[in-house]
Image (cartoon, rainbow, N blue to C red; front, side):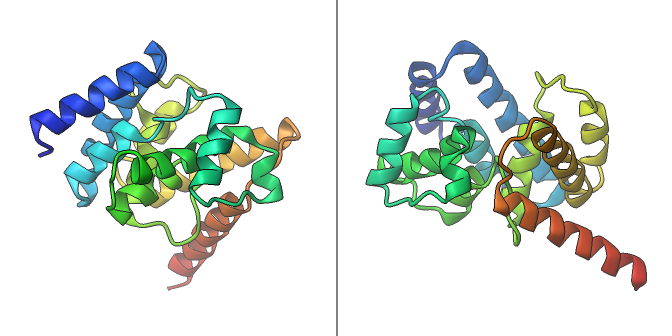
Length: 197
């Protein structure tokens, strides 16, 4: 498990950087990520770190997030530029890499893709993606369905989450990230293949 000193450092850093509600959410996501890692065979330490730190830049201003992205060499697509809610996943990944010196690609990827998902998600990326949806404080409609699905299949839970998100975004006439569409398509095609075999 992550050593006590490092864990204490991460917790105090989050306390400084996040509002109370976001701090509690981060603790809850870390807990859910460890639970899912145990269930599906992902690395529990990495799940904890990625879950704990996934929103580390969430309370930064848009201007600060854009500066982090620019310094980190991240070029935003047109869709990303027009959806600031996506920025914290990318700026969070850059912050972990550049400010905290975290070089583990699995952890960085899990933070990077926790909001949108993408085709070709790793097991750890799926774990953190789902943990963010099912953390203890979540109370959106159908959260119980998501929690139930996550008991047996990360892919089934991810597909349900994507359908929920894509529907919500389209109803609000918000831009939809191409990575989410690619992940949705991958899961649907995989589901069809499974049925035909």
